[in-house]
Length: 219
Image 1 (cartoon, rainbow, N blue to C red):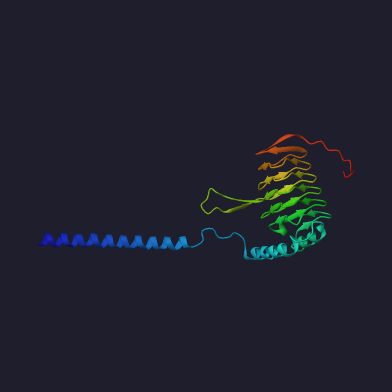
Image 2 (image 1 turned 120 degrees about the horizontal axis):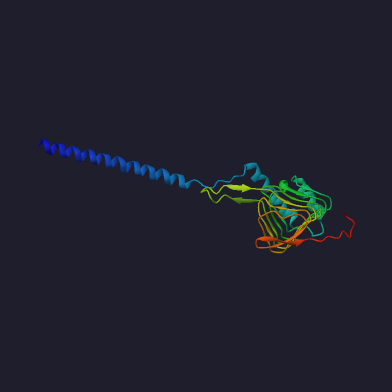
């Protein structure tokens, strides 16, 4: 009888322990489910940043995008109201998209062509007489894909004076295009390009020096 009672008590203890473990497992699962309901990828941008961008998007839709192509002065004014640094006679076409005007700097006579996408989460600067042709994408941000949270990584882009970014070029975060350099159409640029060279390709590579005759007497 004593042995039977001992076995019964042992079974009860094992059952109680298993019940406790099962309960703990359910609690852990419930906590995990709660955590997955929270957004694992919250915005890295402040509320003030998001509000300013929302306001800019409204201005872009109502006043910037519908403006006639020749009204470059009007679009310079709108960008300056949002703290962009825009030089004299800079040309920004109405279909050009600027993510954050306060992160844009353009020297005199610099140009953002039709349907250029300027994703300037970090600052993007264009030197004097720099031209970015149609459909090009200036991308100043990426994500750290080695981490589950995919944090935003931002790096500035600098385009030198008298450089020319031809049509449909992608320029990645942190890239500097040297003064006077030319990047051929539909190139992929992920590394810096030296001054006064011609580069093209996927990824872009230097093809040779750029010859330059100052027939306008600008230098």
